[in-house]
Amino acid sequence: MEGLWFKERPGPVHPNCKCEVRQEPMPRVGIVNTLQGFEDHATEKFDAGQKITVTIRNLGPFWAGARIWVDRTKWKSTSYLKAGKSEVFVFTKFSELPVPWEVFIIIAVGDNSTLQYTIQG
Image 1 (cartoon, rainbow, N blue to C red):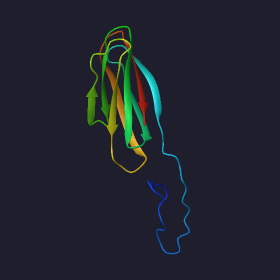
Image 2: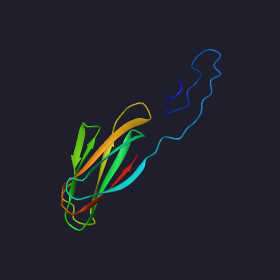
Image 3: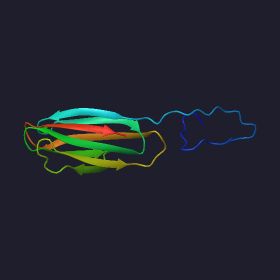
Image 4: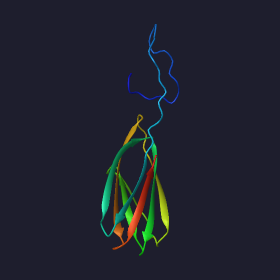
């Protein structure tokens, strides 16, 4: 059963069980990066929990927006963000822990602008 994750401590799984049960911390992710200029993009692949938060912040100087694709199936778009504004998106996925994630972010609106993205999970 090596590599399996449990929310609660499991009991003996077979007669005369002397298996070692270790508590390991949940994988955490904290990614911060920037995109600059129209259609600049990035892909982040990582393992985390069943929920991640993606924050997009416009560093300016012009209005800008982004699209976010998660695992090539779910996508969301920001509104037109003026400089200094941000939007937060939450994505969930139910799977055995740790959960593999792939996040693709692209500047969809706003030439010569800079966006900062933060991914936490």
